[in-house]
Length: 155
Image 1 (cartoon, rainbow, N blue to C red):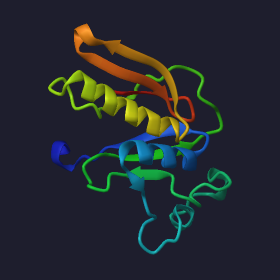
Image 2 (cartoon, one colour):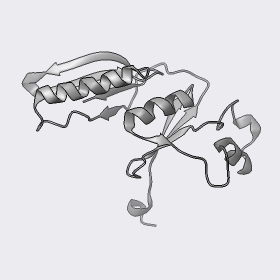
Image 3 (cartoon, helix red, strand yellow):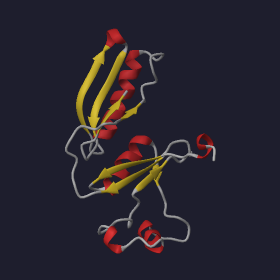
Image 4 (cartoon, helix red, strand yellow):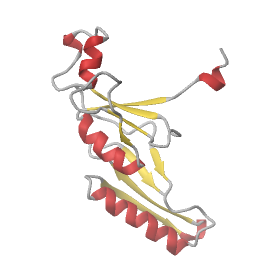
């Protein structure tokens, strides 16, 4: 097997409320909820047909989409796995949502684009943690948290 050509990537994110995360990150990334496999009306039904024991399916698990996919098929599938414990420490990874256009775009345009994206995401439950405005370095970004406290940057 040629791993480089056959490998796909799924990002799994532990969370308390998968549907909240599907809604938020679908909006943030331009992804869509992943429909259940053909022949199944829900992911729960699919998992039950696959033999997953009922005690491994939390109440409501799979009744609504718990994963999102890139509608263009370029990005990885993201699965929001419900877990009983809440987030307690800083992320060891984070998303950089690159909406500004990069250093080739005038700073004023980048600031406006980043600000508009941050405003859209705060309306969906995100919090602004810090604004990094460093014109001498050509850098502008807004550090944020999603509705469950996971950090990410809008750049």
